[in-house]
Amino acid sequence: MTEKSQILVTGGAGYIGSHSVLALCEAGYEPIVVDNLDNSSHESIKRVESIVGRSIKFYKLDIRDHQKLKDVFINHSFASVVHFCGLKAVGESVVYPLKYYENNLAGTITLLKLMEDFQVRKMIFSSSATVYGDPDEVPVKEDSKRFATNPYGRTKLMIEDICFDLANTKKRDNWQIALLRYFNPIGAHESGLIGENPKGIPNNLMPFILKVASGELDQLKVFGGDYPTNDGTGRRDYIHVMDLAEGHVAAIAWLENELLQGSICQAFNLGTGNSVSVLELLHEFFLSIGVKVNYEIVDRRQGDIAECYADPSFANQILNWKTKRGLKEMIEDGWKWQTLNPYGYS
Image (tube, rainbow, N blue to C red):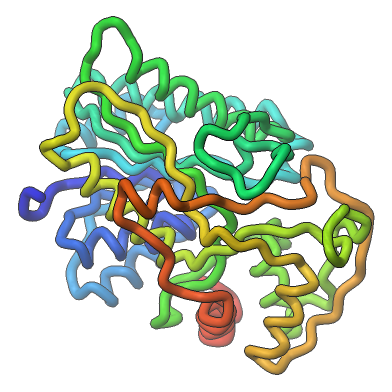
């Protein structure tokens, strides 16, 4: 690794982005963050700065703005790009599909064009387990059939296809891309200074649980109690956000390996390899925190599936990465964030 390699991090002020910026700093990289702050806060970067003890260059801009993003490329010499930018709520994507296609696809294409212009051909793309749709069998492997069940997932799938096409173009421009397929990140940094900060009513399960447990919201809505699972609720592979963040550091090391030659676009599952149901998560929350969360089982949510969890063995082998933190730690770290920051970054 070149000392203080500059890494462009799009969407670096978001939940996974901010934790990954912290992990990059701790690994000796110099992350340069761009974010439009539509669904994030600059405060997250300020807090990362306080944890790592140094300043982080930040640009407030939308990556669809070609000229402003070009200026960032002019001002810096990037070794690689970590691309988080994108809208990410499954339910919202079903209601506003055009918003998701316009934002996620147009932003990525603008970014890739500038990477091509400035000869930056190494990228980590923030993909998702949603590209597996409703899998025929679990755990899913990287070569499992891809089929998204909602517009959000389809934008991830389409961007993956764009990346595969870039790496397989006849020009052979030596694009080297890691597609990191996240499962379900929860938790927060152990300091409690940064965490998930949804605006309005949370779309994801754990922030909703935390807000009900703290008394901010009255009741958790569990979408679907009639899935073909052990207790009728959906089962997911929950991964600590810092384990996920460290996966990005491992992927950058893989991209920088001199033995990696020629064009390549490779997917990696980042998960624990275990699935937990909603009711099991609530039970573990009670055991860990001692707070019983009031919930109601309601109708299934469009675009959701019964069960999905990872086979992470390929990432374990190729990236030399594996998860270190268990469900109890995910819950305790998430609760610490909630109790120290009841109003998020406000």
